[in-house]
Amino acid sequence: MSETVPRVGVVGGSLGGLTAALLLRDAGCEVDVYERSRAKLQSRGAGIVLHPMSVRYLIEQELIDLDDVSVPAQWWRYVDVDGRVVHREPCRHRFTSWNTLYHAMYDHFDAEHYHLGREMSGLDKDAERVRVSFSDGGKESFDLLVCADGAASSARELLLPGNKPTYAGYTGWRGTAEEADLSAATLAELADTITYHVMPNSHILTYPIPGHDGARERGHRLMNFVWYRNVAEGADFEALMTDRQGTYRPFSVPPGMLDRKYVNELRDTATALPSAMAEVVHKTAEPFVQGIFDVAVERLVFGRVCLLGDAAFCARPHAAAGTAKAAANAWALAEAMRDHDGDVAAALRAWEPDQLELGRRLVERNREMGERSQFRCTWYPGDPSLMFGLYGPGN
Ligand SMILES: Cc1cc2nc3c(=O)[nH]c(=O)nc-3n(C[C@H](O)[C@H](O)[C@H](O)COP(=O)(O)OP(=O)(O)OC[C@H]3O[C@@H](n4cnc5c(N)ncnc54)[C@H](O)[C@@H]3O)c2cc1C
Image (tube, rainbow, N blue to C red; front, side):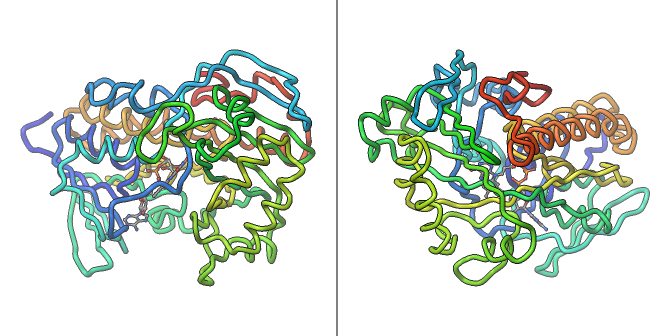
């Protein structure tokens, strides 16, 4: 890196922002992270499929051992409504919790450069600098601004005002049950597997993740579920996504905030699922719901500002690659900064094309998977094109 150290601001301190901050710091930049939340972030309560890219930083720096932070599954299975296995093959994936990754990364960033309660409210840029204003009235200026502020990105709104997330017509209902609360039969059936059940216009999957305390032993972990259910755009969607306190949250109503009427409806409807899956849903104390949207952009770079992670492309969750994509964006950015000796404009120009392509392909593949499941009903058990993966099915 050149003798003048580039000053980098990262807006959004979740997994994408933290990965970028760690890598850019290691590449020789002076990095500050600005996170809107006043407190350290907490998982929305769900699992993460571990792609190598999501943990590349933590593994290469020898900060974690995969066996300590994730659980494997032996089989990738599909079951019919009676719980009979209709397809089974070995599973290569491991599963972890969002909290595990967040804390591991947070602990290795410099706390004094991670600023909680700092919400970006505006930005202004010229060829030399980017000036950011915060809702607390503060201002900072940077050589490079990385906007990793998620699917509802305010940076994207400022930079691409006409670009709006598109609602996909369905929702992901999620949650975790304590394995300790599950019957012996259900635990025996689900514990070593990722299990799918396909229904008309819907599917549900379950897989185990580490417990709240990080426990990885069977019987002490959590069983995670994700159930995709169609909800018409408009009044139905708006009512569902309005939390117990009356706030409309189109992207996600977090655990504990979903109107009880919908929690009860979920439990009633779950009775028709294969019995082990029904039990997981019934024993989930606080299910939550996520609106499924497509977010895609035509540009990632605006002078010395870039969009990264879900702020740029937010794919439907079927390939489970959102965290991995954000990490891939961050790795490529740090490499470009190194290759261009800290010349921000040149680095961003070199970085953009491949990241645009990666984002477009992921959004497109997930859209196709979602349409097949929810509307065309052509998602069949064992279809290899429906595997998780960042770069392609199973990859
Ligand atoms: C608290 C939290 C919990 C999550 N839990 C899960 C989970 O359990 N399972 C799962 O699959 N995915 C979860 N996700 C989503 C997952 O992190 C992302 O889909 C993926 O990792 C890409 O991350 P990202 O950093 O690009 O965006 P996000 O993870 O969405 O992070 C965006 C961050 O930007 C911050 N932000 C937004 N606007 C501003 C602003 N104007 N100024 C400053 N900061 C701003 C937000 O508070 C947020 O922390 C969670 C995200 C968050 C924020």
